[in-house]
Amino acid sequence: MSRQTLHIHGVTRSFPAQGKGAPTLALRPTDLTVAPGEFVAILGPSGCGKSTLLRIVAGLDTPSGGTLALDATPIRGPGAERGMVFQSYTLFPWLTVAENIAYGLRERGLPRAEQRAIVARFIARTGLAGFEDHWPKQLSGGMQQRCALARALANDPEILLLDEPFGALDHQTRELMQELLLEIWQADRKTVLFVTHDIDEAIFLASRVLVMSARPGGIKSEVVVPLPYPREWTVKTTVEFAALKARLMGDIREEVRKSIG
Amino acid sequence: MHPLKPISRAARLFLGAAFFAAFIAAWALATYGGYVPPLFLASPGKTLVAGWSLFTEFGFAGDIAITLFRVVGGFLIAAVIAVPLGLAMGAFKPVEAFFEPFVSFARYLPASAFIPLLILWAGVDEKQKLSVIVIGSVFQLIIMVSVIASATRRDLVEAAYTLGSRPAGIVRRVIVPAAAPQVMETLRLVLGWAWTYVIVAELIGAQSGIGHMIMDSQRLLDTGQMIFGIAVIGVIGLVTDMLFKAMNRALFPWAAL
Ligand SMILES: Nc1ncnc2c1ncn2[C@@H]1O[C@H](COP(=O)(O)OP(=O)(O)OP(=O)(O)O)[C@@H](O)[C@H]1O
Ligand SMILES: [Mg+2]
Image 1 (cartoon, each protein chain N blue to C red):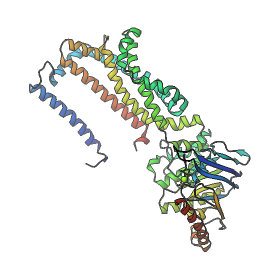
Image 2 (image 1 turned 180 degrees about the horizontal axis):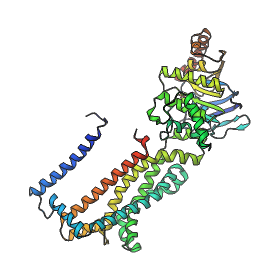
Image 3 (image 1 turned 90 degrees about the vertical axis):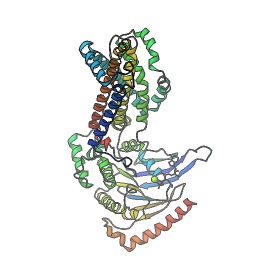
Image 4 (image 1 turned 120 degrees about the horizontal axis):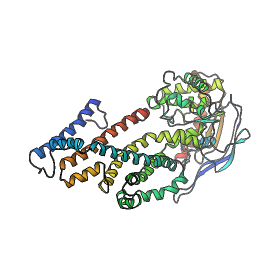
């Protein structure tokens, strides 16, 4: 269970000019509050600043202005309480699956026995049993992302930041991963900030969907998803789902068109 | 043949041995066929005989031992300085900014040009021989290790940060393991250079070692001994290279995948 609230207040980011060009404003002043246990999906056209926003929350990038805090604690750099799964494969190639999952636990200096117990639990939850001693390169893309998810979750973060974690996977694997993530989230109720291009994915998983405007990005609209949890994949065939999808599609098409010019 | 397609172990061994065989055959043809006068190039048979007498009459085993000691000693001193410094430069940009310009300058100084100066400073004893090897390899090694460490994947560093690593943890648990296989490959390469420097150092002002033996043989116009000495260096190089490769495979199984 997450307990802390994420406060984002007037956060902006502009990147310095390249050569003679003007500086790139990637993120307009953005306000967002994420309550504990919320699953917030962020949708938006390519280049609108979704990754930038997530990286700022993770502490991997510094905002040009504005403030961020987890409850009352300002965010000033990366920390274990904000776990992240990236779009690219970022397992440590020199560590086995089990060692990758134990990475954060070892950094915290947890006793070996405790590490092993936690790793075993997340191996089971992400369906990686039998692959504990494999190297990342011996895994399929879907398995690597499950392992990355297990690695982030094993650290028991307050908030989970997911930047298109299933973006590189094929459609079937992707749907299975969505169900796996949903199952885990329904059990743990961790705060999740989930960036995606995929409208279905956003509606299926999230309790709230934010649509970002074309660059310079900002939050254009917000849709609360009224579908009750626990959700099954069959929810994708319901009328409510289709109505939400139609509405979000309209919003996004407009922004994508703007971003193309 | 298809580009990048691996071959079997047996085929690899056979092809590697085949070139050695072809090389020796060409050598035999040139010498036994009378195409090259014996004064310039001894035949394979003469070379083996000369080698035998080197071991039995001239104590060549002692020369090999002292040369090996110099190579390994100089190489280890260079590695102990260069690997930590190179990693620190790659990881921390202020450290890099401090050392990099000087190291880049120093690595163009030819080690052999230092020999006369080193003889003045250190005499003709072991210190001078080791210094030549260290000067010849340490600066190159520092730069290469620092480039390897700088190239650590940023996304892995970022992932480690989001898992709670502090800067010291990033160095110890990301930069060092990520760089390790390539650093070992670089050490393998530099060990080869150390052999070049040791022989150069032994050609001038030495009383022992393989290089000294080769110089002595030149005075006696014994091309058989000279070629045998050179071949011995090659064989030792080949063996250490194979040991290094086997060690890397054992230490870093993940890197070979
Ligand atoms: N390091 C950087 N330097 C300069 N500009 C950058 C940098 N990183 C991002 N940008 C710019 O900021 C804008 C937002 O980038 P960001 O990666 O956040 O987009 P995104 O919404 O995640 O896109 P995508 O969906 O394609 O991943 C882009 O226009 C990009 O050109
Ligand atoms: Mg992105």
